[in-house]
Image 1: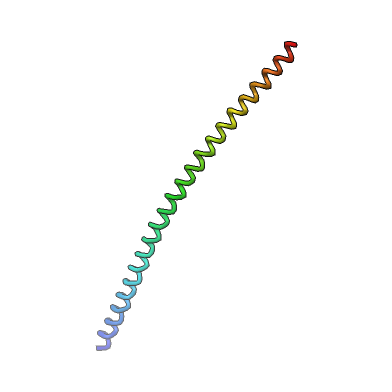
Image 2: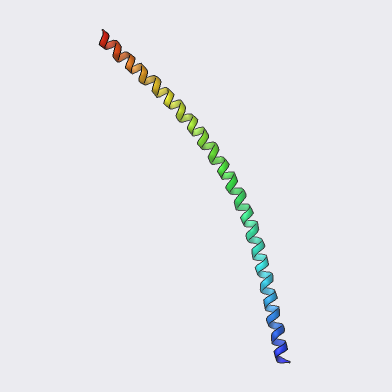
Length: 81
């Protein structure tokens, strides 16, 4: 009889632990989904930022090229004169 009571207690503890683990697993899954959504949002923002930064760098390169051409032109003019 004592053994049966101990078995019931062990089963109750095991059942309680299973329920606790199931709840923890559910919370972890919800957290994972939230982190995946956040990751996608941040990846999108990063891609947009890099795209706009690249465009700005391209504009600077064009300006640098024009300035360089002007300098070479003036240098050639001074050599001709």
